[in-house]
Length: 507
Ligand SMILES: Nc1ncnc2c1ncn2[C@@H]1O[C@H](COP(=O)(O)OP(=O)(O)OP(=O)(O)O)[C@@H](O)[C@H]1O
Image (cartoon, rainbow, N blue to C red; front, side):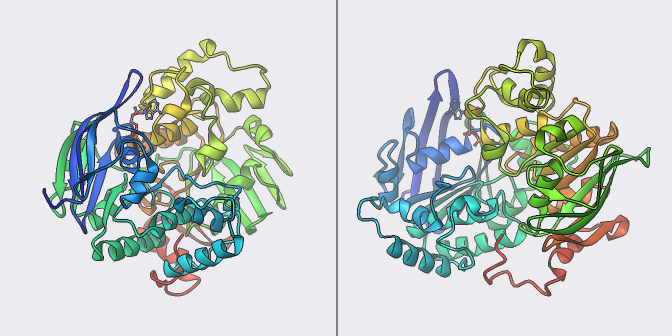
């Protein structure tokens, strides 16, 4: 272990009474990709933040190239060659891409040259095959996938010795992941190392040389490339045997229509016809950025939209807005939980209740006590790791925050639930719980419209999948035609073959 690039020894991090990390030891060699896996709340992000210098360990040591890393100093970690890209993006939304990319070198705002920043950003984006991203664009105008690419580009800009990717692929579709793997291979070929934090076991099988499994803030085990199965890893993460992964969609017992639109038009949508049955799980496939986010936002009324005809649970409407949608019986899990989904400074219970307060104008802050039974039921059903309904949502791990955004729609007489990649950033066991919760909603007659960046879950858990391309429906897949290859093929078929190494597809 003497020639290890990184050695972390007995790392501990406590937040008041919470022991996030309880004594973690691992190392990473030059040129190696080390996976860090574990359930939501296992301590992965906390370890990543300690390496990046974003939080100081309560105790323990970290060395890079044999030199101790100053505790809790981002600057010191950077100087030692450590860079990190987070799933919860650390970009400033109102700044341009160029301004954000110039941040890591601590460019002082005084004397900051916009022209130089744009030129440097253009050169960087081009070298990373991302020149389709405009360096002058405000980050807030980019899709989540593109924001994630900028976050990764920023970490790569410093030619790091150690790159930490904390679920940085979680909003990327397969071509984006291929782009990321190409960059990782370039970096490791030059002797750089990567710590790859992810819940996507398929990606880990492809890219990781070794892995460390965390459970409850401790190392539960280690694995090496090619010498593990998904089931073994899931058991190690959970501390118990793995279960069958995907549930089947439930038998449909009614022909009733939960939602229908013809010629739905909105920014980014070119006229969509869609019918969603009560109790149907309808998947939306396609490469990110082809109208999936716009479709869900339009249907919930989060973006202006018009249609020739539009019905929700048999009621004809001409337009909607979020408050009206909740009253009509819709639920919506948005793409960006931080920006659209949660109030991080409010409690877990208040976040679960938030839409009901707005929609029914109950006034004041939610009366948690009155809803305690419902809240406890949701937290239990989704195994949300929390100290209780009064804990601030902001102190939950990312995956547990995501569960809240879904959980608020459970057991609340919904007719339609719109899902934008609800399993993003949640662990494999939680995914199973969520699949089961989705199937249970469908069994109760709720229509589910579900966009996922993970093709496998669409293929296994949905009755039917429509694939979007450039804001329109390119294909509908059902029965024997519903396969992973067909979903991916339909997503790119309209444009001919897909060259994964060229720019413009990494989303
Ligand atoms: N600022 C904080 N204050 C209090 N508790 C925290 C804070 N940050 C993290 N925790 C707690 O520490 C534990 C580990 O969290 P961490 O974010 O490291 O988990 P994770 O393995 O990255 O999970 P996920 O896969 O959901 O991102 C969790 O129980 C979390 O609630």
